[in-house]
Length: 335
Ligand code: EPU
Image 1: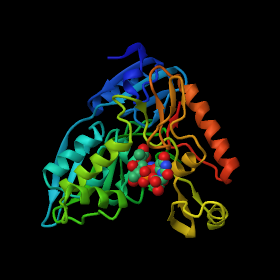
Image 2: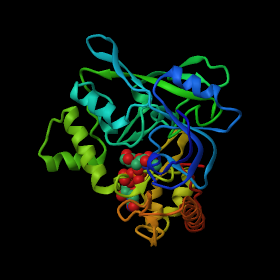
Image 3: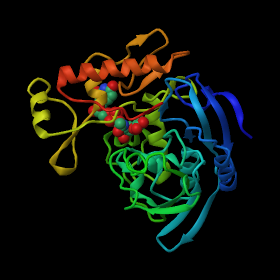
């Protein structure tokens, strides 16, 4: 049922109060098609978990929230299982389902906010793993024709926090389900420094996927604010990928700048480190600010306006450009 003048505050993890002209959730593809028939030329906005969006104004159109549920095993052999999940499943619930059933591959991605359908959209990643490592295919409804199309790994054109759905197919498809290939005999990925340290503290020498998941949950809980308590959308900026020359220049003054190899001979810098070094970490402006434990995360402490947070991000971008010659890019979608 379509509701009018609908408060989106509970549906975005930043907790920004804006209103949608019209709003409805959908729990089946038939319902989705029916809602699209009632669009009346309105602009459309699809929401999953609302964990990667910053609203800066009311939405003068139709907001549709993806609540397509269901997780099923569709195939298996001695070494792998193929699992298909509705796009509206909560990502972390899906991870817990996999860990409980001893299906490996997504344990490093524990506790990432958002929905299963959003995961391929921006190729979510954490602690050395990206969704593209376990992704088989997805189904998506083509809004204009109403047809369901299937996309395999290659067709999604995954990159760092990127896919074809953020680029040339932007706003053309609604992801309805995602299929993953998970392991029965696992390759444990504990190479990420923070995981190693956490496992040591837990006294674990040969970790299971449950141990990895627990370690990741502990690390994330210790430095990332829980959106249920403090409004935020995870990393607000992407980690910038730059030419080696840019790194060398910064190293003249900051020998210890963290950096990681990236494709095509480039290097990835840690945006959180740059913002931290520039003195922004923990800066608070009344109702909003930069998180005190992780400078990459902007937060809404209570009743901030989306524009306040947007303006803060603009100031940070300008300051980092001026201090380090690096152009930060927002990871969060701004509406
Ligand atoms: N750092 C600082 N100060 C800070 C934050 C970070 O000096 O305030 C330094 C850290 O000490 C470390 C480096 O920057 O040397 C990288 O920090 P961290 O390992 O915390 O990871 P990140 O690069 O800040 C990325 C992802 C996170 C993901 C973590 C773990 C992006 C934009 N962010 O953060 O993803 O959880 O790695 O793999 O790639 C998200 O996308 O919403 C997200 C939280």
